[in-house]
Image (cartoon, rainbow, N blue to C red; front, side):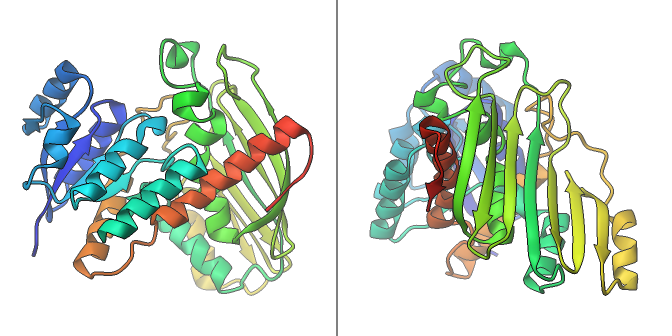
Length: 343
């Protein structure tokens, strides 16, 4: 079994989740960290008993590294990702893959030219509940789907944004949608397919930030189903994420990782066991961004390694990860121009 050597670009909160995920995998080895803050790099490297590289260039040029994970602020993913490609390193990038379509396209092009793989972190996709929901949609068990919705009613204290890159257009690329709700926007298009058009509103209600802390959109999918997106960091005390899908032959409601509704016209014994099987009391990141498990990241990284081992494209490559960013940017444009956005 080949063991893949990882380096992490970034030394903040999310880099810790990357480190724990990598160190939990039998075919992965964490070599070290690099970042623009030497003291922070040193501390996190000591914490995980690995190397603190002196610069991004030093780590990305190192022959000891096969794969880099990008855990910098959202608007600073482009440069290290392209540098990775230029040094023949595969890269897997934290969500959002970047904050503009042009920057994402540059990243995709760099890795295509280098012949390396560019992957993204959408770790919510790897949960058993999501896979069951995806398989059920694909099997047509909902009949003709009439509506699909995602809700992210989260809360962030003012201190979360204070003196930070978060909540800025330049480095966060948006607010409650681009940062907190992007996983669920990805879920919506992953489960339902492409969106044809949307009409959206955004607002900044509870925080002193440049970007939105509340957004909502009504969407029509290319399969003619309707849907909605709701994301906020202004919903005290923070509630669990929710996905609802309903159609002419069935309805499912997933709250975080627990199904609260699972009912079909052709109900089976296996269906009857779903509500009991999928129960999870976790609050996820509803009010605390650090209160998430690292295991979904580990599954995401393991799937990326598997794609490399089997010499096949990763299912969440740059092009796939781009889709959620495109939807969010369309929400912002619709809200800004007060008109429908058509894809």
